[in-house]
Length: 258
Ligand code: 6PG
Picture (cartoon, rainbow, N blue to C red):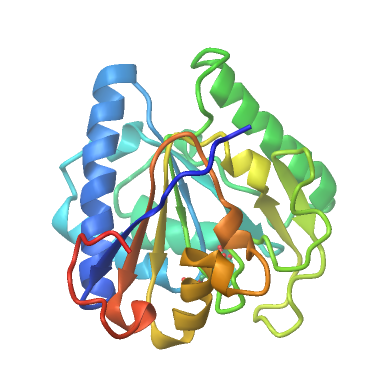
């Protein structure tokens, strides 16, 4: 059982500034992790906000970390191949991993084009377990998971109302994402119990269309029930990097806990 933590909320003028601060956290924790443990596992998400993160990592920190020693995972993936514009892996490959020449062996992608997504979910869960075991039985599986927030309160591919949010597995298949959400394709996703094994988690959220969901996530008592993003827990810090448009009026001070 992972105890509830108070999330830290950092507010920035715009997405570029929020992504820049998250990039600095990644550089610091990856450098420390590689130095202290010889390994660093970073899980990425899809959507549009990661593009800003990849851009700043690539442009501002290309040599700050031996990026080819980092192991990359994904919080979720859509049921498409890597060359499809909808692919979360493809987004990261084009925007970050290819330009940094990260070897394929470090890219623990979810195979969205697999003929059986259920088998792929099991295979990916086993990949996570194997990586985990190499670190010792008690170690968290991934050092840092970067998540986004949907306007409906979803994160990764964990959607409000899904009956399997608490499934006691680390990875599973969502065949029916929120019908209003594009792209409406099945997904393979880490679950709440899977995310709960991460050493730390960071959300990157931008834009006025996220404001209501963000307010409900950060003050769940004000909403009609906890949204999936509000239920994310892990043993270490959960930090929200948000822009002012998403946080709303009054969110003027960067670094101020919300
Ligand atoms: C996906 C995601 C998803 C995403 C949010 C936020 O594959 O769609 O991983 O959870 O992070 O929908 O998306 P934006 O970055 O576009 O705001």
